[in-house]
Amino acid sequence: MVSLDLTTPVDGPLTVSIRKARTVSVTVDGTTVSGMTAAETVGGALLALDIPLQDLDYSIPAETADLPEDGQIELVRVHEEIQIATDEVAYANTYVEDPTTPLDETSVVEPGQMGFTLLVCAFVTPMVKKSGGTVTTPGRPARPKTASWAMAPIS
Image (cartoon, rainbow, N blue to C red; front, side, top):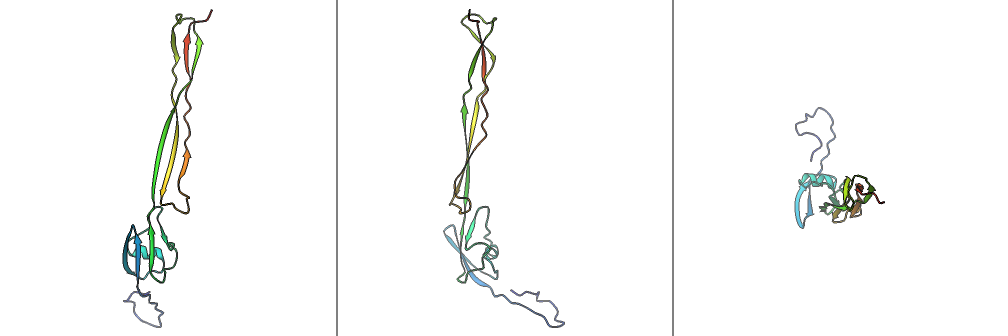
């Protein structure tokens, strides 16, 4: 790679630097991809070979590291899966006296409503050194609403 455009006119002393392309081998998903690049960093070499890091992916050596002398790079694809589980929470019943309700019968004054809890789990495969693996976050529970029932007054 030449630092100046090849059509640059020479009208005085110029400083030109030339960086030779090197062979690079990238191991990704069990296969090896080889190519030539003049990039100075691992990330630049991955871009030149059209194998960019995505999401939580990482490379060995790191993306910002200088290209290794042997040209060997390992790219680790990281899969993240999020699972959400809910569980219903039963509501309670309360009974209040109601003079209009016949003996031995009940009627709904205010209906109850089921609540729920939420559990969110994130699974990262393979384990990423930065995040530490599985993350569990308890969700905010929806509190159940108590039902009110009417019953005949107790004499």
